[in-house]
Length: 481
Image (cartoon, rainbow, N blue to C red; front, side, top):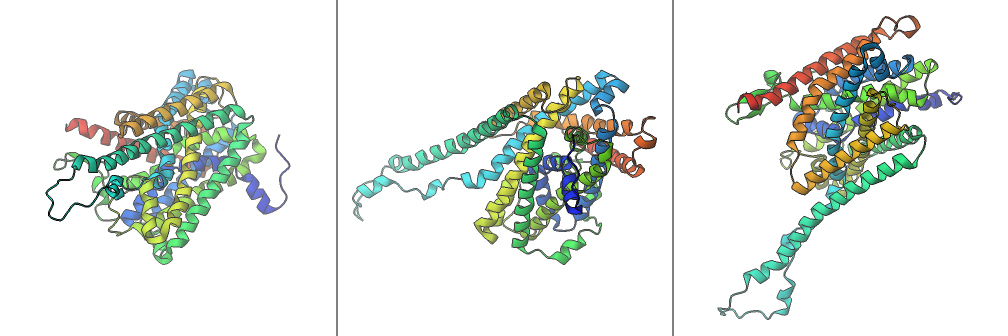
């Protein structure tokens, strides 16, 4: 049962926050932080408006999903099974689970990226040969040669130890984090309430950490405001769809940073799960207004945090000759240290850790819960099968992350497989929500506001466009190979 609603306006607003905070926490992971940093690095403040559009689309899709969760008799997969057949619901669950499981390894690596700056060993070149202190200095005219192998051995030993540490410690961290989460899943009851409180804490940590960094770097606020005015850098639309560059023999796509920022903010999979969260929260028709407030404020926090990262990166990284390429969020945090000291790097890394850990848990939950529900086995995390499938997603991500660290290379076949699934899966989720929102029984008191359906349809079109770009990018190497 729901508690009595708080009386003060501020307390009512806080009480309305919940499910969308969990949704925001899974969206605001390492990928989102890296994408925002790359936009700041490449375009400074110029493309902030793209983030604003993505946030508006995400608010609409999340609010639509919340409405469906409250107003439908069953979960989305239950309704799909009843109205379109169990195979449709099962296919939805399978595709979403595979996407979540395949990309779970990146959330493991995101946690490592947050602690990576603190795991770097001292440089081997700085280590001296301790045996040299025990040997008398050779005469200036002596022809006695020093043993190069003996001199090099201590350095080689140090390098070998550093190599082992750089692999072993991260793998142990990955195993510990996954074991901790699995034990927590089976050690606590009423998991929704615990997860909501934890996600609020982690989002709060991100908000504070990135805000401190933002004010440390002292951005040009007037220039930052101009980023809200839509503008297109020259040449950006030369590759509306990716093209093959015969000179480099690689796919050329100038829109990659913009597409990444939009796609990591407007997450159809995250919005889809909102319908499950409001049901686990226990919300009913009496909470429809709360659902809209929750979606608006929760996703707005997502946008605000991403914007703080973007503006910080624009100030620190734009036209910075020392920063050539950002390959990971660890590169972003380390780039803050030369200009703003170790404290800035530590604070930014704390924000990265909060984002990575929240995505790490909730992404696996989404995959496990929707897969179980697709087969009619329940869709709530406290139930047996959603919990088992969540653990399976965690173990899959852990195994791939360990392989990646041990082998020193990304599992490209798995990444291509996951990207291929998104071509079909993400539009399918948007279509499922809009199809249910426009059924004949969704009228009168059950009707979905027109603005949600209109923006949801625009979101569907954008997801199809992104899926098309992904498909073209995947096919080009094979057609020109």
